[in-house]
Each structure stands twice: as structure tokens, then as C-alpha cells.
Length: 205
Image (cartoon, rainbow, N blue to C red; front, side):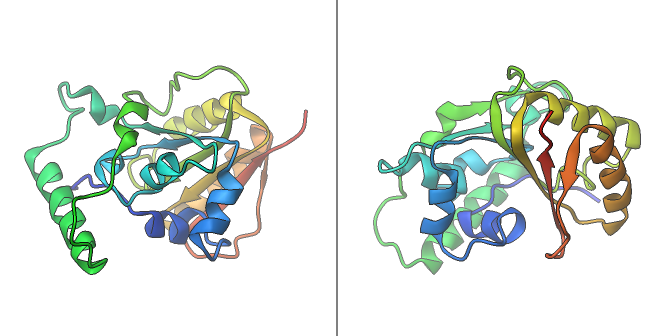
């Protein structure tokens, strides 16, 4: 079955990886002053209603938000297809109509904050990131345990102490091996209060 890569709105991010926050303002306040990396972001940078574009447009807060997606390289198997781009344009247009916006789309500053890279080799220094997001990557694109361990190890390297990994998964069977690997690499695993969501917190060393 072919998989289409698309972007995600702020509301979708809130539901999937920030479920404890009830309002947009509350979430953006939490992200203020932090460096956030969205690992496997798809075409989110092209969605004017995405969390990254909403955050970067906010002049009252200082949010450093980076999209990371291997398909941004545009080479070989790592590139967005015509179907990907068409699907995202359709989603954004529907979203605009739902919001009853009659004028042009909001600015999309996220294009300048997007990086082509793999989750196993993050282009960031040690202890430099506050929050890592994974929406559908772990347990969907990444199911092999060896690959999963490489990613968790790399997440541990780039995160600051008490930094977070917020994961939305679609396959419940990934939770147990994910939890075991997280503990090996010095993460505390949060209580699973929300379906499809798990939070890992980098332990103090």
C-alpha cells in the first residue's frame, strides 16, 4: 500500500504529541525559549497552519523550531512525489475553507528552518535540543528494533538533561520494546495516559 507524505496542522500536533495542552496559547507558552526538532516532518513546512509555521510567526515568543525530513534531499528514494505534493495542497486548501479565510494564506517561514537528514544521524550537537517530536515515524516507518535503538541512542545524544521525546505511534506493539530501549539510554518513560502517545524524558546524569 502506497504511503502519502503530507503535513500536519497545529491542532493535529496538539492532539498527537501535546495532548495535555488545551489551547494554542498554552502550548506556545510551553515551547517559548525552547529548541524543538520535528523528526520525520513530511511536508509540514508547506502547511501554513502547522505548529512550526504558527510558532515561527509568533513575534511575542522565542521558539526555535526545526523540521527534519530525509525526503527534503530530493534524491533517489528520498524525495516527495507528485502525489505527496498534490495531497498536501488539497489538505491545505480544505483547511483554509474550513477556517473560512478569504484572503491569501499566512506566511510560511518554516521553509528556512527545514533540514534534510536521517533520524539515525541528527545534524545537531550534543545536549543541544529541548524537545524531539516523532509523529508516525517510530512504529510506522521505523519498526526494526536495531534501527529503533540507533534512533533512541541518537535522541539521547542531542537532548539536553530533562529534554523530551514526544512520540505518536500507530502500532501499540512498539510501546514495550520502545520502553525497554528508552530505559537503556537513560530516559524516564511517562505514564501512558493518552492513546497513541508516549513521552520520554532524558534523565539527569
